[in-house]
Amino acid sequence: MPLEELTMLQTIPIPRLPSSIAEHAKLIAEANRRVDAFTKSRRETIHNFVVCDFAVVGAAIEWIANENLICGNAFCEWGSGLGVVTMMAAIQGFDAVGIEVESDLIDEARRLADDFSIPAGFVEGSFLPEDRSAIADRIQDIDHVDLDAASAYEELGSSIDEFDLIFAFPWPGEHQYFAELFDGCASDGALLMTYDGRNQLVLQRRVG
Image 1 (tube, rainbow, N blue to C red):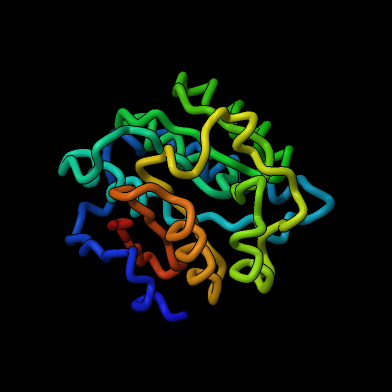
Image 2: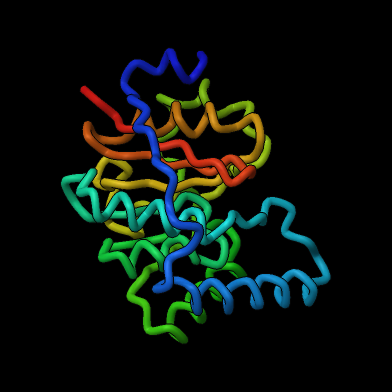
């Protein structure tokens, strides 16, 4: 099913935005340094660990917050890595949490948030719901998502439909699956923002 056939999702155009937000600059600089150190120091590569252009995503989050595009302030990052996007959302006033399946990345994210005194939370586990029966046919062909990891939502005390803005950086060719997961599980009015690896963002709202 092509994205345009996801009738519950409405694309919201993102205007040309500043290349960076001053409020995020120190965090991004330190995060990039730590990403480099983390990847160089590991004996085993985390193959699914790639980072987006933090400045581009941060500018979009600030724009969403300033334009009051969502009703609430609950933010979740699917696959949060070092947690930089989650932290930028917290800086912009969101109640922000990141879900990450790799425990080492969770530890790094928590240290970075603590060092910058940013009130962002991070939970180890899968961003997929615990009951995957309704979406099994949608996710079975995803190559870069751990389909066996336990869901993080029980520990969070929240479910997908309680978040107002979700961010994800899918691998090439897998944006469709993320959109379908969001379409099937999010609440009406919620936003999904995805990054496509070429400094391009897609913003979609689930509509009833």
